[in-house]
Length: 395
Image (cartoon, rainbow, N blue to C red):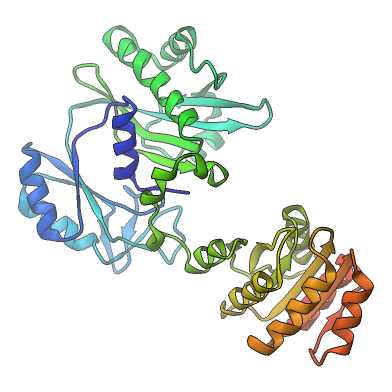
């Protein structure tokens, strides 16, 4: 689950990570009032969408309007907000279609002496979280990693212990931080690592992390992704979810207990098991097709869930064909067959449908499909299924 910058900073503040004062606004007048309330000579109006690169992003139809704007008066704050709210912002992470800005965050300015990068992710190779820092604050970290990887410095840490003092000193030396700024880092970095662990994050990123003129360390941004599988341990985080920022079909699938990610292809995939779903997508691509989604109905899917999965797949206007690839284990082939038949009556299949069944109760499932009046192209294995759906969609 992703959250907005202003929400992340609220959590940072509670965790002892220094942030600046800021106010959320949903209208231009609220942005102007927020500027006055902050009381400083400058402020920054920031678009709030679930995507990075907002500072360099531009509004569709108004390329001069960027997603982060420095303002020096209430009227400028009003104008900046008016140029953002209700419009689509295109960044390096949104794609050309952009994302609609429904909120802005008006944040107090500060005296920036240096901009750094800080991020924490899980390094699966060593089964530990890793803190990454760089002198290239404000830059896309992917670009830094590709062009100048030597500028990214890493320290793995034990989640039960956290980042230790000697590790902070190592990182400060590599970043060229000393004196009072190093003392600030000795509090900031461990606090970020504790936050990452305590909230079961997948990503906790601050870009830029700034050192002020008086050697304070402040999170000028907050990009946080939580592990969905651990959200049950953090019930209060549910209120931070912004459904307007999520793909509607993915929200619908989540409500039905399905794992679904929408893609840009034209072949809808209904599969049980994440590994099999990935393999199905790969082999469709290998044979010249383009998968329209990742969809894992899971091992315990029932007829109602599978029928809803078909509704979701067919609601995508780009889908020109469906591939059902089931290896029956806990989810029996007869359950899938019954769902296919039920869906044909309640949803209707107006695109080619290729079905490959294997596993528990496969013969019974195949018989159910053959005796139904559903128009189906059967396949013997995953390769056969991929070839047939690619051919049927005319790719």
